[in-house]
Image 1 (cartoon, rainbow, N blue to C red):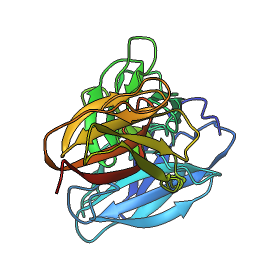
Image 2 (cartoon, rainbow, N blue to C red):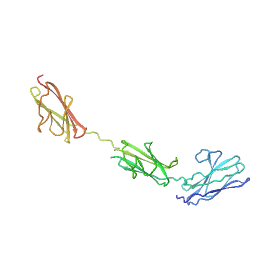
Image 3 (spheres, rainbow, N blue to C red):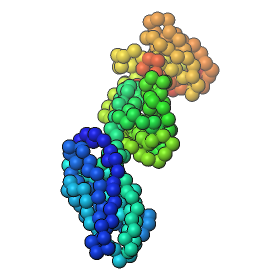
Image 4 (cartoon, rainbow, N blue to C red):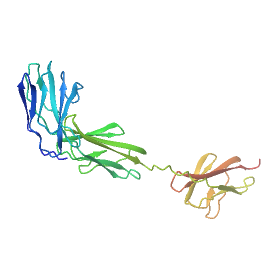
Length: 312
């Protein structure tokens, strides 16, 4: 629909006591005008949302209606509606007393409170990285936007561009807000008022919605004691069945001894071919190898061996 102009005014005429009161108004000229509705209240406030109103009559494209002479004072207002059933705001209020005295009324176009188109655009990539939302409105008046994240007010913006979580003066900035679904809503109002002119929301999935695959099975770790702990120096060679780039943390009696990043993996060291040997004090000793993917904390397997140094 395209409402070309607002109605300039409505003339209310009093015909006679016998004939009752007649409302007469200037017709709207919009091509899709369907007609008018007259509402009646027995007390004030008398508006479309007051709860005191009742629809007296729905009219076509006429410009007069006789409301009769009420037994008690009544209040009337008029709206216009179009072929898509869009309805205007209320006209000024007309008071009709039992004596027939009237007050003037002014009627607006059915689009006096226009329904604004609000468009939201997701920027960034919520699945793989930071993201944000840009909001725009087709209303060219001075407007402001309340921005909500998951139903809670995030911030209020008074100037374009309107962005979530913020803007840099040109477009929305981006951020991360936790893996899972998030809903961002923009509600636009006339600046400095509670008059809503339009709203829209968008739901995004931050991070992958597909569950991560289960970790690969732990690798087989094999430890081999070299030398002879009973009679002399000894050591341990560690190996793994995992062919990826791995590293090993080597521990002696529960304490980190060293980290190895290249094969061969040996305790207390290696000579490039096998583990070297040494002596660490008579008694039992436990050597443990913990293998990780190189440069990560992703463990792929571990094993330990306990030896007795010296004669038992």
